[in-house]
Image (tube, rainbow, N blue to C red; front, side):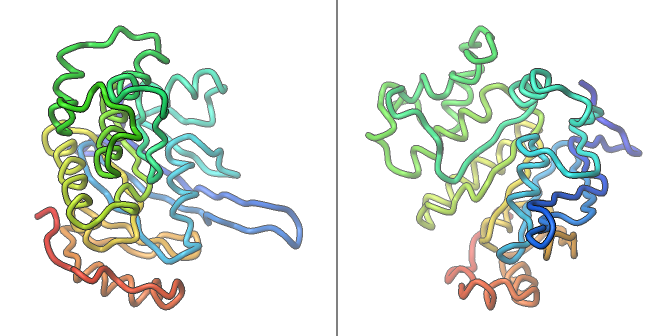
Length: 266
């Protein structure tokens, strides 16, 4: 599968006028409203917005986990709507990695078994050098025989990241990957994600509520009420927090921005 080229850049993922409607009649809810966005190859984008803005629905549609009601989602030059379930599953397996906030590790499998599981499901022979490179990158070389229950939350998220990277996907989607982690562990995980873009050339799209996490990205995209409402390049935690405040994010959710708006990926 090729990537689309625009000028000197290639496009990894594109959404064109995507709508997602749940329910019918009086119960109809439009989670996404003609949403159009482009994510270039080798870029790191954070997606933010108030509660109910459509962040999770966007992520699931872009990753091929949920079918839009209308519009197009293209991964490279492939329109996901043109694929049957078998081909869509293969594309997700070969070209897309997904990192969940809840880790989603299999408790009966060791760290190594969890990491190589996507390769086994794809019927691919594990490449020892590739696996070792990923394992060393996430700092798990001395934990490969451990079970998930023997690891800290940060270590479990590192396993989830390694599992998402081991197939060398073109695009990695991350859903609140640091939401359950303490500040120090979150910074280490975000550094790993940043490195996967900088060193690995992968495309990363991350939904987050945290301005500090967003500051590791090249660009922040803001959603509100299912629509694209703005973007910010070379973000800082302070600038992102100010934009989110103007969107009413923390007024709506009765939350406050991170108490430590420091650090970041730059």
